[in-house]
Amino acid sequence: MKRLLRKLVNVLLWVILFFLFLNVFGWIYNQFTPFDNSIYILLATLLILLVSGLLAQKCVHVISDVYK
Image (tube, rainbow, N blue to C red; front, side, top):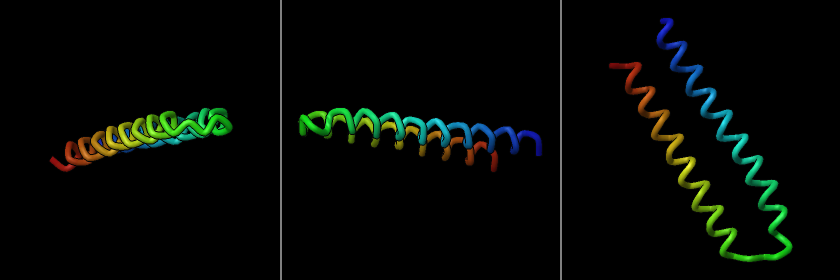
């Protein structure tokens, strides 16, 4: 039970980090919006997809580790 709780806290911390990353991204995106450079928007979108993919992979790894 203690191990499960520790894993759930770990996943919760990753989710909080992801939302903090989204907030920072939103601030940066608002700074670059007046320039309307589609390259910056494309790179930021790819970065968000990469980070969310890594977060999903981490969650799947933790969940599968708990149910072994």
